[in-house]
Length: 473
Image (spheres, rainbow, N blue to C red):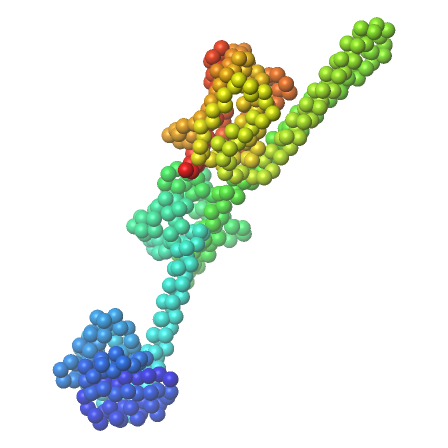
């Protein structure tokens, strides 16, 4: 049922109107003889629509309407005007009236029209309310989703008609900046992807899959996104708007790239180990053959010792490969460097050597096998640094990134080995330690160099890229 408040200072009109309106449909009509009385009744009861005469004593219908609208009351309002008072009707509509009806002496069709307009006004206002509720819910969801939602008008002029709060996280520009300067839309697209993006917006039929593209953040960082969009066409078939959703897939793209790199490194590890083991096995066959042919006991013992050395080398290579078999398999994670640098020296002959680790609160985004890097570097100092008494692990920030330093006070790296120290097979033992330390670091975009001075100690520096580290108290 629709509750109507009918306001008029003529009792006969009120009574006649109430009878006609209630008879015309599912209406309940309450009457008031003045705007003041009507306002009082509205404070006590809820109504769906107000019908008010224009010409009333004290407060006329337009003033009544303005009072309601100034109070923020948007109830449907229909005003009754005298015949030929188009100026009153225009003012009423300007101040927020829904409809106007001219009073005539032919009351039956007049009240029939009024009942119809009452029904229309309520239906329209309910539809507007539902639309506002839907818009409010949409805005609430859109502003709290991680995905970027946008609506771009392309013709006749480039305009951003909607963009949610995720824009600032992905591009560094606020929605207000996009509204003020819509050309930002193209400036944040990576230059290498701009042509592809423009083609997708003008010829969407050529793109069956989501558009994968890069955004350049205001701070220079590159984000990857996956865009789903709908073109809106005019009556000529021209695309005039784009409505779309962009999902940040940076972590997924980086993880896939890291996995590809890890697979490449594992294949490299496999081929290197197979090559080196085959060399040792070939040597074993040679020494076995020579020992069979020799009659000299001393020579036979020499050959047996060489076979034993080759077998030990094979075991060492296999032990090493077992440690690195998980390279890149678990994906990157935030690693606590203070913890892994402090605990990765167990089992080493540390007597007389002070290990000082100053990485408190520093975390880096890296392969979980990062601990092997620190173990190799510390072990390198302990076993091959000569008279080492102190190993110091510390870090500092740089303009773009951070730098981790592992240094000792030993004999340092021989000058002739410095340029090749990270190559496979260089150094003592298997010759793989520093080689694979570099490979593990490169998965996370980190680089390692040796900057120590021969005779004064080794110094390894690990450069961590911007965004690849964070500090926590």
